[in-house]
Amino acid sequence: MDTHFDQLLEFPCFQTFKVMGVAHERLPDDVIGCLQTHAPGDYNPTIKPSPKGNYHSVSVSVRVTSKEHMELIYTELAGLELVRVVL
Image 1 (cartoon, rainbow, N blue to C red):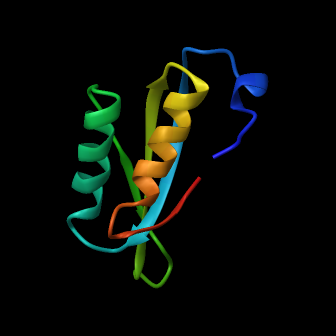
Image 2: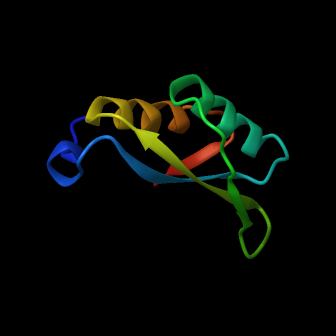
Image 3: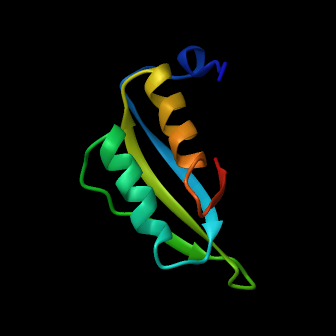
């Protein structure tokens, strides 16, 4: 992943990751589990269903320490089975 996060942000900083995935009870736990592996913390996700209820968005603020750390989190979240998009 070749991003310009290091030119746009001053690290360390907090970044909100919005993860959209299949509306399944396991989605928030999968997202938080992934974050705990790469950025341990006490997370309080915000979960919103899509209008038809087929998808959920999980928003979480995470302390990232570098461009590489942020890219790793994006990559790992996008690789989760239930996840469709990471913003």
